[in-house]
Length: 419
Image (cartoon, rainbow, N blue to C red; front, side, top):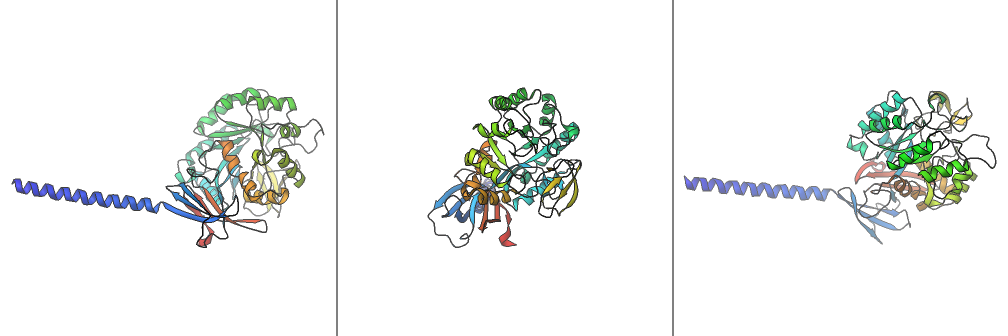
C-alpha cells in the first residue's frame, strides 16, 4: 500500500512539473508574441529607425539601422491626438440618440486617419441631454478598445457668450452663466472624466469657476467669448491655459484695438488651438498666430462634426439648419457663421506645413506632443522608451499625408497595406 501511494505521489509530481513546464513555455511564447519591431523613417530627422514594442510599450529605439525594405517609404510618428471632436459619420456626441456603438464606430474610423487619442466634445445643450450623454460616454469607456483612445471628455459650453458671432453655431436657447453645482453633476455622470472645459471668462462667476476647475485638475480653455484684456488676464491668472480655436467663435465685426484676439495672442501663458481646415482661418491668420505662439504653444484640432465623412447637402446641426458645400465647408446661413468642420486632423497637418513652411516634425508636435502635455497624458505623445506604443505610419507625397498603419498600445488597429 505504501509503495502504491509513493508511486502515485511520484506520478502526480511529474504531472505537475510537466504542466508547469508547459505553462511556462506558453507564457514565454505569449511574451514573445507581444514583441514587435516597427521600421520606417523617423519623423524628427528623416532617418531610418526601428522601434521595438513589448507588451504595448516602446522598449527600445534603434537608430542608424538598415531596414529590410518594408518601411523605406513610411514615416513613423506618435499617434495623433485631437482634443476637440464633436462627432463623425453622421454620429454626434450631442445627439439625443447617442449610443455606445456609435462611439466605437467613430473611434475605429478615426484610427484610419492616425488618430489614436481624442476627446469627445459636448457642446451647449440642456442639462438633461448633457447629463445623459456624459453617462453614455462614461459607459463607452468600459469597452477597453474604446477606453484606450479616450482619456476624457471636453465640454465646450454652455457657459459661453450669448452674443451673435461670439456664440458661433451654439444654440442661444442653451447659453447660460457658469453653475458649479450643475457642472459637478455632469462630472459625476462622466465618471469624473471631464478633462477640459471651454468657457467665456466675462460671464458672471466665471473667474471663480475657473479657480475651482483648476483645483480639480480640469483644463480651462477660453473660447466663444468677448472678454476684455483685463478679464482675460484675470482668467489666465486664475488658471486658464489655452484658447479654444483662436480666431473662431468670434464676431465678424470687432473693434480694431479692443477685441479678444490681441490679449490672448500676447499672453505667453496661453496655448492656442487652431482649426487649419482651410475655412476657419485665412492663411495670413494661421501664419500670424503660429509666429506669435510658436510650435511649443500651438495645438491643431479638427473640430469635426457629425457631418465629417458625409456627402454635401442641407443638414440640421446644433438644432439649426446648416449647409455643407461640395468642398467640405459647413455654414449656418442664418448667422453667416461656420458650424464646425468636416475634415480630420490630417488635413490640418497638411495645411499648417503648406501655409507656414514648418517642418513635418513641428506639425506632428502640434498634434501629438503638445496636446499630450496640455492634457497631462504622460504615457503618450512622443516616441520614447517607456511610452505607450501609440504610433502612426504614413506617406507624405507632394504635401498629401496618407495613413497606412495605426498602432494603439502596441496593437495594430488599422493597416491599409493589407487591404
